[in-house]
Length: 67
Image (cartoon, rainbow, N blue to C red; front, top):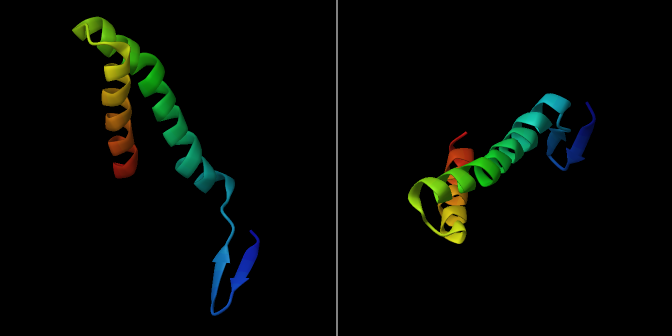
């Protein structure tokens, strides 16, 4: 890994595994929430699609911040 000098502290570049954990997994969760969750919630409750978007994306954002 490449080391970046930032004055007194040095930082290491992120590897592939860390990139997957921080970017690919949350992206996949958000994709599933919007494509499956919105449709399921809208059909099962009869809510308008836009309301289902807000509910699902809010829940997905909270879940991603916990992970």
